[in-house]
Length: 237
Image 1 (cartoon, rainbow, N blue to C red):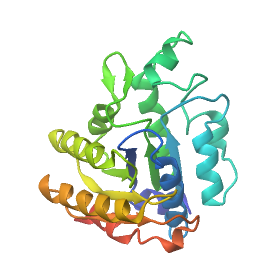
Image 2 (image 1 turned 180 degrees about the vertical axis):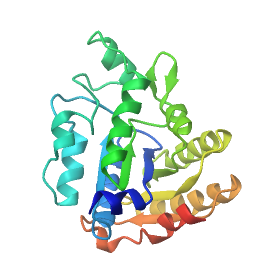
Image 3 (image 1 turned 135 degrees about the vertical axis):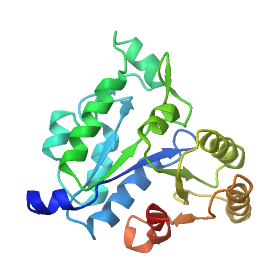
Image 4 (image 1 turned 180 degrees about the horizontal axis):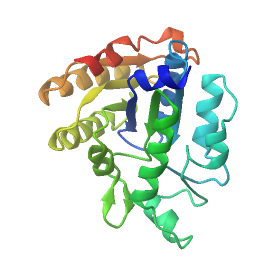
């Protein structure tokens, strides 16, 4: 893509967050990025804060593997993963124990530079929506402040109905655009729980005044099996 074409093409940044930690947002982010990459030439992802590892963020490695692409220059530079901490804890604690602070300015700078280089950018959060990035900033407040539309990842696991409703209430209270709910089926669940939790998630979207847009992510690693279209259609609504 030439610089002229890239400048003429709208830039889309989408935040991807989960109702809780371990719900599969990295898996879903990578699959969505793979889908976008099959349709657009310029797609990448970010992980704002990664805890529990060192070097290049583990979730970035997963994104690239699912996308079927090698690590990029931005990955090597740390632009796609501006904060990585060793302790598997909340970002503010993991940073504090290393004598550091997650700075909003650094996140903004990395995101801006990624946006300058890619037409589509998926920005993955850390943990649940209200996890503290530092002593004064929650993840959801950071995402809301950026004005990015949000994709929320849920699952059939026990507790998901409660966590989904709490998350939707927090999103609504901040006036954010919700593109839709991703229902991650990766794992082993009782069929009755899968059906009932999905039904309750749809009801929760209605109750909070959001479009009833739910994308089912089956236990596969091919984004071609996933109907992402309705979620992305919300960008133009």
